[in-house]
Length: 177
Length: 300
Image 1 (tube, chains in turn red, green):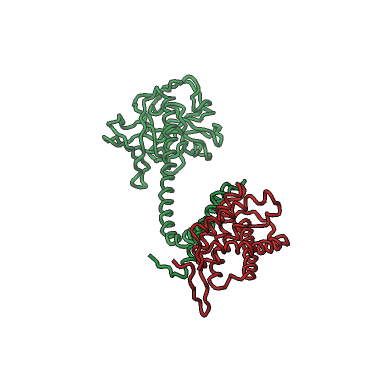
Image 2 (cartoon, rainbow over the protein chains, first blue to last red):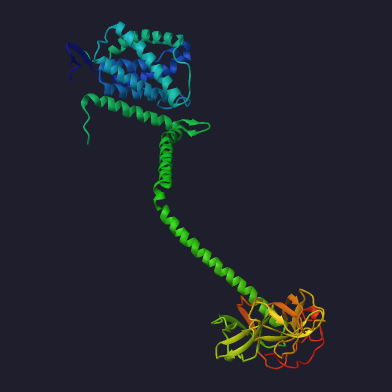
């Protein structure tokens, strides 16, 4: 099996990556564990959303909307499950499903290998993710809360910065071309 | 099955996955005042249709009731009018029966208060065939014991006497007939005089001397002298008094309504009658208490 192949859209050539066996599963579980454990040691780590970063990364890399949204759904539901009884199953699931779909769709059209592109896309996706969570809480659950503020912006930038480095680590899980 | 274009498959999948998770959310969330969210959502999703359906049904029902259903209103009105007429007729019949029941009750009471006098109730089934005589026809005759010259009365007063008795019917000559008469007397002055018909609504008291004092409105009762009617039955009241030669011309208004007779009592005896309370005031005429006097003769 090829490790990567070209996806031709118009005149551009987008590379679709394949990953080592179990890499996605491993990365997902690791992100969830880190997400659950890290804030216990570092309070400010609550700003980070590692499952979201994993969702974005595999979406951008695999560039398949269907697998991207399914992976986002799975990661979101796992995150919901680990978030305690106050977070209903589906809150992060819906948001990460959409983010996985968007990341895969955008990844199929843009070159997302550059760190700057990854930074920008992650920041946008983070804000979009929080927006989806906000909408879900407000519309579906009737739990309105403030959405866009400085804290969100900072969190988006921090996650985007962290994502640049995490994505480099995750690139190592790709099958060599 | 509908084929989904490949470029849209991921969108369909996205929509399905999100819908599933939304449902998953709804199943989990339980609001304090509204129960589980899925229930709230379901009610919220269904209620607009229910409300619209209810309004729509109400609108349609109103339209139907106020417009289309009126097409049958004319027919309904006709039926109701017919029914109303039938009910009016029924009411009239019932009123007639009630009045008849009252009259029969009076007859029954009269009979029960005069148990010593055999009598039979009869219904008036006909009247005079011409103006030459004033008679009525009863639905009872010889088979019921009715014979000629038997007295006919009502609880109000004297009616007349039987002039013909047939097996099943009888003919009665009313007191107003010019050939009719009854032994009578004034209730207060106790002046006796036969009273006879004149062919007119008023009777005539024929043999009261001018010297006797007679008051307008004084009651006239039977004297029992005719051997047909028992004493103290009302005959009428004095309605007109004129001096005559040698007797007063006295007109009497009959006590019984002879113009509208429906049920009468026929006295089933040809012997001189005496009321059981002859020595005491009669129930119907307490002021007419007079000693029993043998009837000298019958009035034709």
